[in-house]
Length: 165
Figure 1 (cartoon, one colour):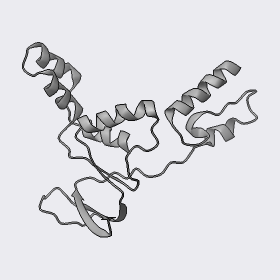
Figure 2 (tube, one colour; figure 1 turned 120 degrees about the vertical axis):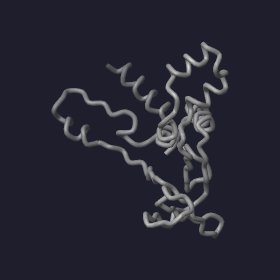
Figure 3 (cartoon, rainbow, N blue to C red; figure 1 turned 180 degrees about the horizontal axis):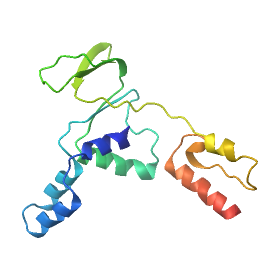
């Protein structure tokens, strides 16, 4: 969810070439450049069932992603349960035609949006492994094709396979 939110938040953000030009000509300062290249014009909110976002990130990755989420101005609401997503919503903003109803602390809350992106669940994908099994001499499975886990675990598995071959 965090990666998708970051990608969406950066849509419409200033490109690095423009920021570099403006910095060189002292039109903006470093903090302004970071803000203008980190977020576009969209207001992004992550709705998360768990008590924190990015729960599966490894310790070495988590702080980087959380800093990017903060710099991009992404909001998060945790500890919720989504109850309904409707595309027939009416809000004060004409472009907001979707509504997500979620429950938090036994209260139903509505949030209106122009776009809803659903990023739920983790599932390993072993389709290619099954197709290749028995067709090549050595086949090693690492990372999320075995089961979903942290990047650090996948790197460690890759290192171990590298030592074997």
